[in-house]
Length: 421
Image 1: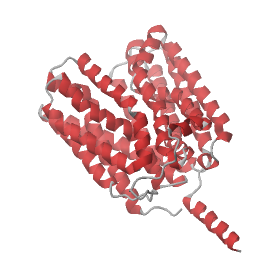
Image 2: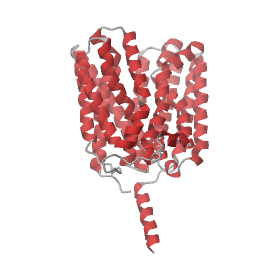
Image 3: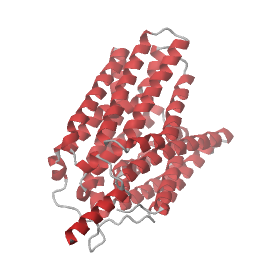
Image 4: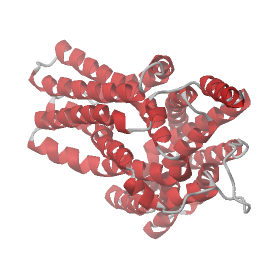
């Protein structure tokens, strides 16, 4: 397969940056926005948001079917338009029922996004180009989220009407991203009616794909690990270690800036090796970082503690650099093309469930033993790393070994020449 034109990659990445900037404007203020405009207690706002998210999670299998039937681009663009429409209605919300009515389509769009975007990338590029594009995406999305947060802060600093600027700005970002991505042609096979070719059997094919299900289950501990930075670490640092609250923001900045700056050069090195090895190494380094956080509980306060916190956070960031983009490329390639949407919708559950349960699980573990929580996470992610290595031989070879598109095309031409001879 030949390398995709620069214009395709440029339009895709510009769409991702615009999306991330809009999301970065709104996500940090989602609860505060509805608390501000409706006057509802934060607990009630949180309950409504959670209810909509759970319903969206239940709809996840439908997203997989739609991707396989109508193409990833159609579902991706449709999700953007759905969320943009809901965001435009946000300024009209003045009670709990109206809030739920606008939150539900946003939750449905959010649920369809991960399997749709992964399927879309798999249709645009292959081989090592897929790893590199996903790395660039992670890097630019981190930067876009940061810019969005700064824009939101500036708008709110000027006037309370900045809340409306934030939600309408997010809506504009979704619409612009939809417009950019809708112009990208993927070459996906189509039926006479314009839909995508999809094998019969639906999710039964996914259920019979044991290696893919194994990869999905092994991702659950690592997905919980990803959540510590935003859920468990702030509580651990401030309540268990008596660290200042400001340190939480600094550590978050270290992580996001590290991903934005280093993801691309790291991935350029990783594409020379098996994806499973990089994913396992990333999970293993996560485990080491969690051991480091556990050790912090016995350190004295002061410079030693601060140095230890930064060292553990740096290790966590290194694990994310090794795991993130490579795991996405591995899973997208391991999913059969004809039912890729369904496969990736199932895989998305390995992220969605930990994201939903992390606050409850982490607070429960912290109440029992803070050190115990970190050690449980360390053991779980280390087990995930070992499991991925054992699963390596059962996965499709093309998913394990990144192959440059040019090399694949050359091999194909060579094979055709030999047959002709």
